[in-house]
Length: 198
Image (cartoon, rainbow, N blue to C red):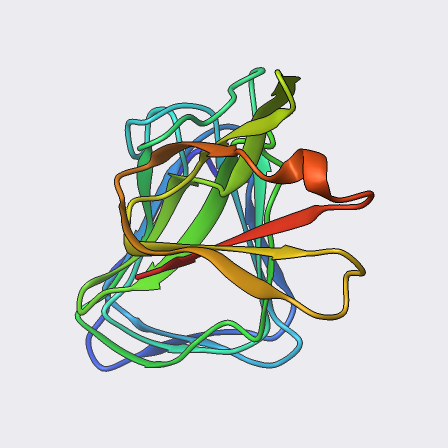
């Protein structure tokens, strides 16, 4: 539980085969060593805001070789929102990636995305694809769908959950969709699913 640390040396390695937790408070840990995390290693970081080292933990190293687990926890009652971004790990070179990630739950309208960039590992909050509301008006079924912007949207329909037919295809998806099915009253059962294509 380090609130601030730094290791300086040339051509040295810091190997984590156990656990490093920067979890007592959001913290910055920086080393000029090459960081190696083995399959049994765990790197634990806390996110309690959007400023590195002040509100969320960042681990900085020279080159990194990754395996094992990354464990993120939330602190101080903080609830990440779209489009919050956290560079939780920075490096000059990287080999491998974490075999497992343990991320805290988000509201149903959001999801985590982990991206290995050339110089950093970024944790980002994105909109999740969710049905937001539905209603039946004058025999028409209407629903609202929200999610991450994609290039097209496909809505399919089924009467038995086995056989699906396209109902609405190749529509540009800008993050929100309101759809009305004017044929619902003709069927005893009617099921819908939506797919967003990047």
